Length: 220
Image (cartoon, rainbow, N blue to C red; front, side, top):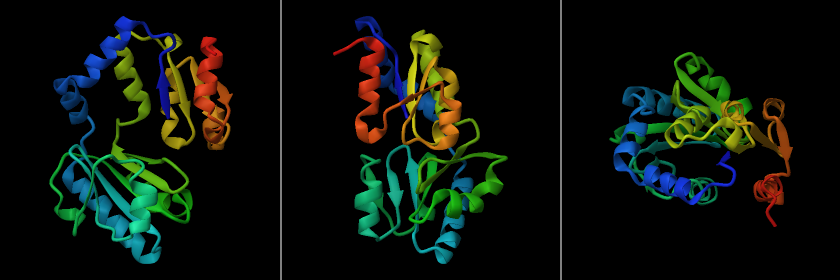
């Protein structure tokens, strides 16, 4: 998903830069969404059990310092992991990782909705368990979602819903749709997200985000 505040002023852009660059702010924000380490390890064990039945399953442990994988499948690392994580460590055993864990991301070559979600659905009462893509499922703390993230940015920068534009394509973007007047589902989005969003935009493969921003702001 993407977040845009229409027609940002120079002052607002500078405020955004200060917000992002402030270590104290980043540390405080991260502290609110850190998984209990025992819970994260439970999620890893579930993924291992799932992998025993479905060899196409892999797991990424997303920490504050780095992302971690124990998979030796170089194709999975190069094609599915490297594009999402700037810093990645390959470890022998994810259960030994010591870091502030923000998310456990589980990948299934077959289908995250059909293969992965049923194995993690029982944790939905205590954690945020969301299908984030055709192949990905994310497990986070209960209050962690893109909607709460947008509200935090809006509060910090004095941005209203009427000044916010968001774009999404999958179920991890659902809450975000409620926090912006200009909420767009991509043409290739999950059907449930299209129902939640106010508007549709061209698909990801058609440069939909940039085209829509230009159209709404009257840019050439």
